[in-house]
Image 1 (tube, rainbow, N blue to C red):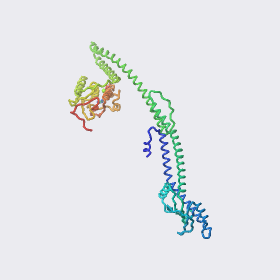
Image 2 (image 1 turned 180 degrees about the horizontal axis):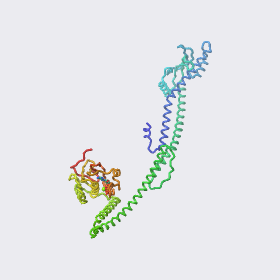
Image 3 (image 1 turned 30 degrees about the horizontal axis):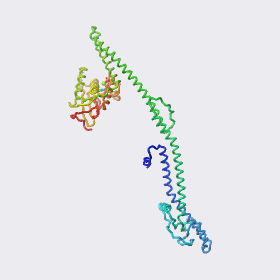
Image 4 (image 1 turned 30 degrees about the vertical axis):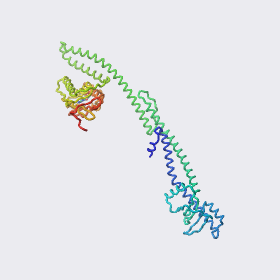
Length: 474
Ligand SMILES: Nc1ncnc2c1ncn2[C@@H]1O[C@H](COP(=O)(O)OP(=O)(O)OP(=O)(O)O)[C@@H](O)[C@H]1O
Ligand SMILES: [Mg+2]
């Protein structure tokens, strides 16, 4: 009910104003609920008072020997009661009787002896709704003495008038109560909730991680708002810290890439010179040279990998190409790396084509295959499948599986599990796949081998045209 009412309120109205209106509404509603029984009670009391007054007026007849009084006294007594006629019955017999000379006809008879709560309410509203004066004949036991049954004939208009006055008083009181309650509630909500909430909102909206801390004093409140304020403060501090850290890392990164660039040039010179050392006549130099060359090569590779990672990724230039051809090329590259019995096989359909950046995919798959080989796998296999929504490429090997220590941050830079590794291969692979709108994930890894899967949107940077292989419906 409350929610339904809230929906009708315009959206611009603030929280406190809404609560103000709701409070007024609910107080008024409560007053109406209280008004219904109280107005019927008011009418009952009015009628019972008339019965009581009738009883007393009737008893005054006992002062005369024949229970007869003058017409003038009769009319005075009846005027005091506010009735046209009064009758008292004891044991079913009329004992006292007072009546005006011209008795008007009775419009409605009200017997208070058998009226239920609901009937009393209905009768009260019946009275309120009348336009003309009705003559009522009210029957009920005298409140003074229940053994006496009193009957009184009276006008309805004075009763209705009093009921109207009573209603007006109740309405006025309700308005005062509603306004005072709502006003107090409004003020307390302003102080307790709205203002702190506004402060909190302003702090959120005005927050900028690179601006210095505003020096907001810590909240001393122990309620939910205090918790929220403190949580916001610590969150903002963490964000500022992370932002500073990020800025420092970025500066460091650009420094490193400049350094790497120059280092690579120096190393190229060293590479050329060390190659020349191989021709030296000195047997000791000759013996040490291959190790020197290997060390220099590693240094060049490390510098190159760091540079690759630090530099902005080149934009994806998609073109359609057969994946099987690319796998064959990677296989040849790997074969050049040395005779260790490692084989790369393709499980791809010959017409499996993708639309992607070929060079970047060569690096992605090359990195995955090189990882498998360096981990000690004998065989790696690249497969592919097309589904209605996406295409996937899998790289599976029979190596020993990924070490538990590197798994939690597998795709993060500088996370390596092998001596001499830089831990950039998978980070670069992921960056490149993401640049294609795809995703790379580790499917499984254990003593029997490791499977990586690259998912690419069929419609995005890459489109597979193969109909030969279909992903199983999942
Ligand atoms: N197929 C795999 N089998 C076993 N371990 C793997 C495999 N692929 C990756 N790993 C583990 O994950 C680590 C991180 O790989 P990643 O390619 O990111 O870095 P790296 O190979 O150590 O160095 P880089 O590739 O930069 O020369 C590896 O060091 C290796 O321990
Ligand atoms: Mg690697």
